[in-house]
Amino acid sequence: MEYSPPPLFKQGASARVKMTVFACISIVLLLVDSQMRTLGTVRQVVGTVLHPLQMVALLPRDAIYGAGDYFSSLAEMKKQVDELKRQQIADAQALQQAQLRTAENNQLRRLMGAREQVPTKSMLAEVLYDARDASSRKIILNRGSNSDVSLGLPVIDNQGVVGQVTRVFPFTSEVTLLTDKDQAIPVQLLRNGLRSVAYGRGKIGSLELRFTAPNADIKVGDIVVTSGLDGIYPAGLAVARVTQVDSNANGAFGGVICQPLAGIQNNRQLLILMSPPEIAPRPPDEEPRVPRKGNNRMAPIKDPAKEEAPAAGAASAAAGSELIPKAPAAATPATTPVTGTPAVSTPAVTTPAARTPTAATPATVPANRAPATGAPAATPTKEPAR
Image (cartoon, rainbow, N blue to C red; front, side, top):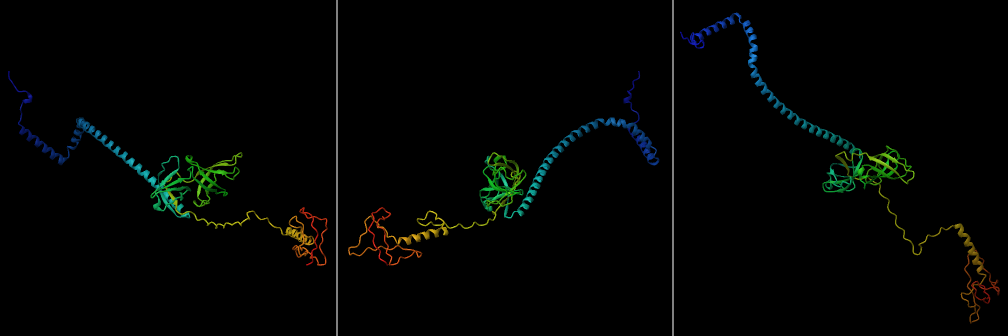
């Protein structure tokens, strides 16, 4: 039995010979293809036939690359989403700041317009925070005594009156709002000039016109402005709008509710009126009259026509008294002096209208006539002529 090696291990031509043959074939094909362009169709046919095999062979590689790309793109997309979210938050904050700045600029522009219309000097202030007392309606401004802020100065915005400075510190000041329950301001209706006083209603946030007559000419929608009678608020500043009128015919007063026009709880910038309005000086006080001693009662008014009649009667009575001797001051009867000279009575003073008795006509009194005082009748005496 003849032994022969398996076909795999059979050796034909040497490897050197094979390499030389295949190299020559390759060179020939290259020359033929470069010169005659005859192998292009063969390459296309072979490439078309082998393409599915190439795709199948590349499937594992493509699957590995696809998985890597998927996970890397997922991480990249997550990173981009986080970055976009942060950018969105930053843009929203910037938008809010821009809107706030725009609102502040608009408010400042309106305040500057109101500042030009107000006749007095004013200063811009910013609200820092609300007061700590929850039961009151007060705010704190960033202006104090170092900025020449004093007590009682009014505070306004572009729409109307906000309140009044009630406390002053070196760098801040406290403002009591119009709606505070302890705040009052003299006002008048813009439509008919009816004067009244507006009182705050506390946490309700509105004003009330107290002590108004039930039949007062007040309508819903009327504008209430400052009257300027207190010497603090300039006249003509808008205060509130009438929202409710309660005319109670049975009561002595009617109820009027108003809503403030100013942005009391909205704005951050306000105006402080630095100088009060100019008021005409008061007239000088009259000097007190010093009453005379013993003349505490009022003197009656004298009528000249009525005074002439008693004067004429007194004159005629005085004229008749010269003809009648006077009674003695006491009850002692009249006697003559020791020397024997008859007693002479002093004649009564008469007015020029009375008639003077002549020397030849002695005045005699009947013996049976007694004095008016109840004294015994005296012996009639003869009055010598003057």
